[in-house]
Structures are given as structure tokens and as C-alpha cells.
Length: 333
Image (cartoon, rainbow, N blue to C red; front, side, top):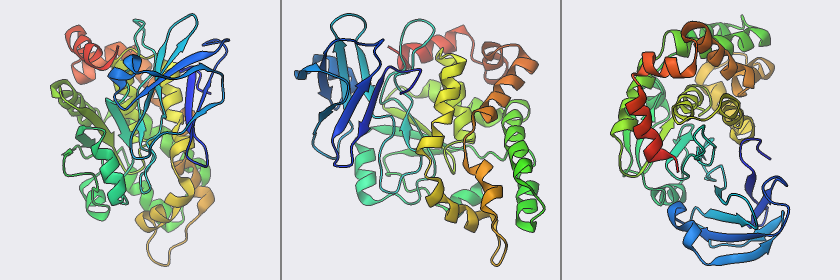
């Protein structure tokens, strides 16, 4: 169960939706409403009048559902399954639901984060079209996009914001030559996240420019795995919306759950190791994982260089009080 959000929505092996929640959210039965539009879930007719943790609902396939949970006392919440389950998707998930400093929550169905989309199936694209995503900021390099072409629906505009952290290319050459150890990889991942703060702010500044201009439909960011470049971008978006640091870290670390490491190992082998080269799984695992110390390194770098996340948002991305208020009015409720 997430520390940052009191309700968990997951799918059972037979496709039902299982609803769980913390005792602090509700210690008595809960009324449950469901809708395909998050903004209308609270007005839907109840499907369950007295649900207990572990309640299950069977709903028609092919839609994304938002659940309005109303306890007998206390705050009602809108919840959804955090990940968008796609046959060929990679770490595709919703940034909704997180609490903000002013007592609001990030809106569901407005902000998505993902890895590459090159393996999406036609049913996947049909499902994504129902999410009304209008714009995707893609942090992959040109050669990455050529190797794994975007497979998103044509209705989504792609903004290429190419990003290569620090000495990434030279380190990948060390990997190919066999001149690297697992701890070197850990150190490299920490350095990448620090480098986002010290040397790679421009793509994220442009991301915020797009986000400020984006008034209709949902917004999405992606990279190859959806956990490093996208992880930092998501951390900055959540920070701009007033989400606390521990929740930002928790969202980043969810890639440990949603990134399909075993499936992606072969893709990484093809990407970084030349034919006949040695592929050291133990070496690669620190890169495949989204360990909390990686994003904490970026947040620590922000504190050292700028004093606070708020000061960094202003100096690096030009997000003053006016810009932050625009984003919060649009993306939180």
C-alpha cells in the first residue's frame, strides 16, 4: 500500500478490480462509485454501498476506470489503477492522486509517464486513444528514437527533447568493453541524477513550457525505460504541483514495481552490447532498477546548489508564483 495514497486499485489474475485501503482512510464500510471520466466519478450511481478492503468489481474491458470512494466519515477520494496495463507498454502509469501542500490532490487522467512505446499493439493504441493524451515530451536521443520508433497513436503530438546525461556515452563504451563493475554502475546512476540538476535543465525547462501551454487533454512524458530521465521530469512536475519530497521519491521508486526488468534485459543487451560482446546481468541490474537513492541524489543536489525545490523551479525553469498557480489550478483539485 502506498504511503502517499490511502487507496490501492489492482487487477486480479482473472481481470477483476480489487480495492484496498488503509484503516486511517476508513475503518467502516465504504460507498464506491465508478466512471470512465475522473471528473464525473463522484456523481455516478454507487456500484457498492458497503465495501470492505479487498472488495472486487468486474467491469467491461477496454476502458480506464476511476473509483470514487466515500467513507462514512472523512475525506472521499478518487482513485485509479496506478499503471495503465498495455500488452506492449513499458512502465506506463498515471501521476494522479498524490496529495499537495495546499490540501488538494493531483488530478487523475491528466499526467502520464512511460517508457518507450515501440512495442505497443493495435489494442494498446486503441486504449491509449481513450485517455485523450494530446502531447508527449520524449527525452530520448535521436538515435534511440530511430532504433525504437515511437508507437503512440497518431493523435498524440511528439515533442522531441533529446537528453544525454553527463558522460553517458563514454560509460556505455566501458560497459561494452567489460571495464565496469556493479558499484561503478550504481555510482553512474547517482551521477546521472545529479547531472540532471547541474548540467541538463534545458530539456526540462522546455517540458514545463509545453505543460504551461497545454490546456486541453492529457500530457505525457517518456524516455527509453520511463524511470531515469522521465523519473526526474515527473519528480519536477510533482514538485511544481506542491507534492512533498517523500511522495516524489515514492513515485520514482514505483518503477521497481512497474518496469518489466526481465523483458527489457534483452532490449538493453541489443542497445548497449555489440554482437559477440559480453552481457553482464549483475552489472546491468543497477541501471535497470529505480533505486530511491538515485532520485535522492538529484534532490540533494538541488538543496546544495539552490537551497530548495521551489528555488530550483524558479531559477532553472522560470516557474514563479504565477506559473506554479497556473499549473496547480489546472492539474490539482
